[in-house]
Length: 317
Length: 210
Picture 1 (cartoon, each protein chain N blue to C red):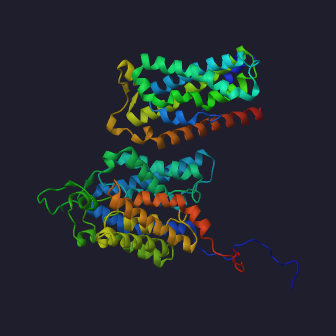
Picture 2 (tube, rainbow over the protein chains, first blue to last red):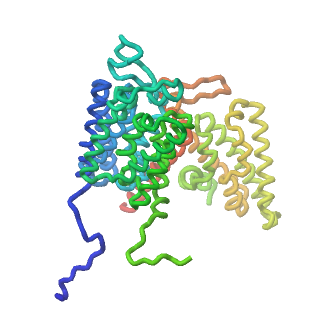
């Protein structure tokens, strides 16, 4: 052995070239179909909202980091992803300034005050949405059917209406699957088109950035519970923010567990909460709160699902 | 320590709400409007000054082992006085502050001052301490309430007791309702404490450099 040339270092010993900017730019790319669908269905206004949210998120992060004398890290795209996700979960007719406030809140309160990327307990985009819903409930619950398409009211350009979940919960109207699948329904900018979200999710899975544990246990739980309660599970999967939430929000690296068993537990927890809120809650949709609540439980889940170390022997009771 | 320095310490350096984080429950719960803040702050100031003076005057005849019950009796006397006066003359404010007026009896600020200060110091010092702490808390409540009232309702200085709807800064529809909900209280308080710490730290480092 060549003594003196032995390099002693702590783990990890293996490195890959995958870094935060690569992952985040892939996420941005994966969200493009959903953005495109949003702009297609809700008009250029949706594009304005997306631009405003992304822009204000990036500017907020850069300003705060400059003010506090920290290195400016907007080039890792994480702020842009937060802004984009926020824009995708707000209604298309939301005043732009409200979206900007949400974006600033996401970055400054939900991310920066906790210490920046990697330290935030809660998903910043969802905190932004929860903040907007609590602050401007009137704006945040005004839904519009996509331009030109309102099957029961022909002859109007745009119809203010309820989301499919509200229609089903309170009016017993069921929107057909094909409309839900392509996204010609009322909803937030990015959540309506199932196919666009699935395309993006497939890309992220192909690139290996998200696993199957969280999204599938999440959606699977919703399917099982809604089926058990005599509802139509496919309808519940296709409506609301479930797909967007399960693939893009719940899988956020920072706020979800890292242990394999923990991921499944986390997904199941999200699914149970979504199903409960949808079936029994006061709100028609519960993906946002379900994920935020499970974010809070992440540390606990990790603690109880730590894998055994190599060679560790199970403790005798 | 002089009267002035005993008074001054409660305003910023040992401010009950921002520095010692005492009395958080009423601070967060009632800071929805400036009128609430002033009402609550002055009520607490009255109780603080009164109880501090009496407890200080009785300190030599108070047996150490039963001092807490004695403090409670003294404090409760002043709280009941405030509660009844407010119910008689400011019924709307009394309605809004509700249970938080009787709860001044167990307010940490008043207990802390009684236990840590008034029971060991002279009457004049205790008076100054009570006055400073009370006014410091009133100022903190006013600052917190001003931000929350403005952001949450779009008005400032609404005083229901005088039939005054407040000065409208922007329309109700634009107001961020969350500011007057519990999370708004926590976030505003946290940011204010952070800001105050930032300013004092900057001053400290500057002084050290000089």
